[in-house]
Length: 457
Image (tube, rainbow, N blue to C red; front, top):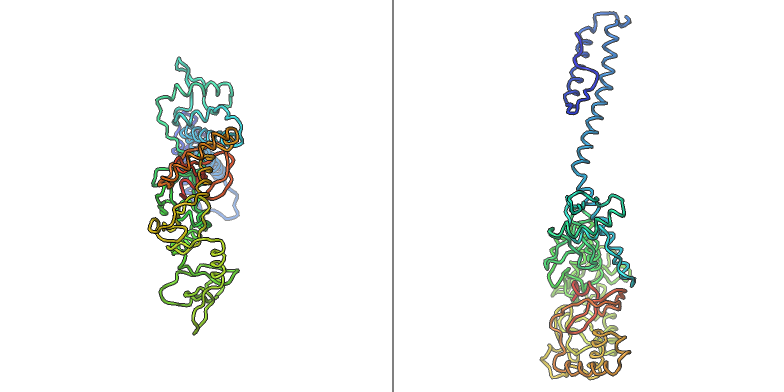
């Protein structure tokens, strides 16, 4: 009985690799059946016959042939994958390079340097070039160059042609509202973006940075943009497990009114223990086992009346000495730094800074003349710049007088409307120094960073 099939692979253009593999396997099965049919018919120490030697040699050749066929099939599938995905891979590579070029341009602008000419990759992003459009044709219709070919002269020609070849394309480019960088149009973990309820987009890096900042700064909680709260179910997939746990713990703390929060009295611990209820109970810190009274927020004192917290008394004494006010809503201590006596607390309570009564429900003056003049000067400088005030002092003084007159009748900013102001400075809300630009409210002329304009105010 002879084994079926040929040991030589077919070299036809459309050769069926799977059929070749099947024939080789059937041939091996035939050889195995021949061996089993002759087993036990001869002496164990007898020499192999010529036929048996030939079958054994053929089996070894078939094993080598099968391995070669498997490698050949893998090579063909890899080649087909490269052919099928080549354009998409080229497109994604061009997207990445375009974002790198955008980032370098932004850094140059922040250093006060001239904005460099847009590269071919930036132009293609601006024009919304698709996967099949990363090539440029001349007026005759022949291909001039493909983006990423490495030929700098043809890439410059491609850049000049992209505007005409892609003019009909629709741009799908998105920008992060915080950093301004372009957001990739892919769905990988590191390139996905968060779409806020107000339609602003956040890159993953800025979103994670905002969540981390919110765990340290309560004024950023709840997470929001343009006064609309984020959907945490949509935010969580962008966060690490550790950050999700940390933010969840802070959420439990920030959701309790400040005057009702109870913390561990041990200075090296200070863990949040929960909310103080109507009735006094002793709370046990799970971290250091310290027992705290929820009534006075001091260390537990069984069978004794509560005494006011010593540190609270010290803070109240300092507030009275500095003429600070206490919010009637959440009892947090606030200080007026500029503007009128109208105070808006983070708990949304609006009150008079002088007497803590509900705003416009008292007979106190609404502003101090010295503070009014200082606020008018601040607003004029923020609008026109300090250099302009030094260059034209008389014009500046006239603007300040006009602003003082306006503030006597309208000193409240009902809703901020933000505009970019070129040039760095200090954010009046979080006090960070920024080198390139700030956001300026067109009504109250307040200067803040981008984060404060969309996530805090």
